[in-house]
Image 1 (cartoon, helix red, strand yellow):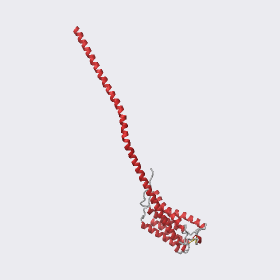
Image 2: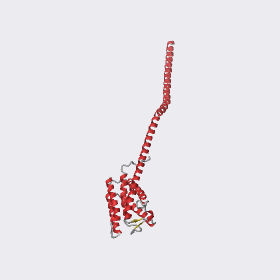
Image 3: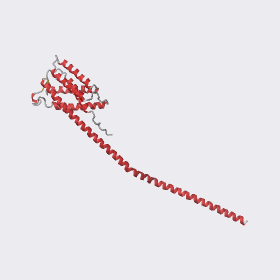
Image 4: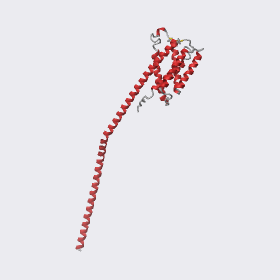
Length: 278
């Protein structure tokens, strides 16, 4: 009996010791896991902050470099476009002033156009204000034609070469010369002939709806301005048959608008595109 009791006591003590050991190991494992979780939760935000801090300088430098490059290219393209616009305006002004001087001199010599004696220049035998006004009008018209073409989305591509432009100028000078040199039974026959020649000039060197519309608009506006000037006594026409002017004068304005428009279109070839601000 004493031996059985001692054996039972020793077995119970051993079981208790094993149970305590298992509980200790389990507690230690849980504590280790909790420590790992805490360490990972603390270290991950710091690593994220470190990573963000490491990436932010390079990202900001790249964005600043790209923005500076785009601003530099935009400013250079704007400068080139402005310089080309000024050059085209100067060329068109000089061409318009020279053509107006020569053609107006022809009209004065044939006594088609009469200016008062006090406004006639002794050097060119013409009014001093005619070349600047016609040069300004030529610059506006020559810049307007390619602008309208680009806005309509159908760029003019018919016979775009300087040889064609020079032939167009020659035909325009011939039409103006015919208005002063040809003698018809009446002004109506001369007007119809010049109208046919003007439409032939448009068909040969333009053939665009924008060119036809702008030519008609220019002829209408220029005719109204001329009527106003003649009405106020700035100058006058001999044998007027269309209110205060000759009936063939709108044909001259129409063909002149088409000619200057072709010059402006040719000058606009190969220009840098106008920059757009995004």
